Image (tube, rainbow, N blue to C red):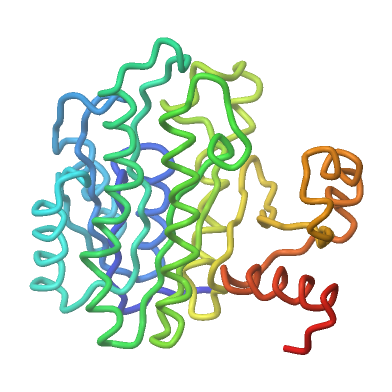
Amino acid sequence: MAGICDGRVAIVTGAGRGIGREHALMLASEGAAVVVNDLGGARDGTGGSLSPAETVVEEIRKAGGTAMADGADVSNLSQVKAMVDRATKEWGSVDLLVANAGILRDKSFAKMEVQDFAKVLDVHLVGTFYCCKAVWEGMRERNYGRIVLTTSSSGLFGNFGQANYGAAKAGIVGLMNVLAAEGRKNNVRVNTISPTAATRMTEELLPPQALELMRPEAITPAVEYLLSEDAPTRTIMGAGAGSFAVIKIVETEGINLPQSEWTPDAIAAHFNEIADMSTAKALEGAFEQTQKYVGQAAKRAGVKL
């Protein structure tokens, strides 16, 4: 995998600290010119400073790499476009994108304010959309692009007090599914990382002995693979503490009921069969589900499709 990024141009958002910093350092060490983006604000998204991004850029340059600092707010489309334009003007293209920027405003749903829900979605989901949108046409025109989005176990599986964060992170998986389908013919591969690491985002959630095992640099090898020439597409990869896994959304085979049994009681009576996970599989797209349901109904009705 050595030198997988030689000659490539990369943007890493939220790269001033934690996981994003490790991604930026890796990309630079592999030969990429890196835009180190970070608003430099507090964990809740307030404030801002270019200092965290500049510190990482200095570290990259001291190691012989190429990088520039950028303080764009990813929830501001004009700033994101300006960041991409700046990188393109300086280095000719943007080939790799790691959408990592994020904030936390955790509260139980009963106590969550509307503005806290909206702001977290603006940064995580809308900000990821803006970054992808800004690089998309260039990648399609050059028939090359690698994009890694960032989801979370909170979005995939749920976590108390994170309705805003969980909703945003689940939405990112939906965005990946569509972008992977649309980018396939132009060799634009889109994947998602679900990281678990000790950062300022998690430092208050875990005991010290667990945090010691969950170093941010343990996530980066998965991202490096998902940015490589041979990367898959439409893959969710979990990573943390040296463990790596693939996460899939699956659907059971289910059953088709005659119209006389389109009732809640019939659903309850057949629920174990409907929920039989031994028949579950991942679907390749939305229409595959439609075809399955129609096929089951046609079989019951004796209709040849």
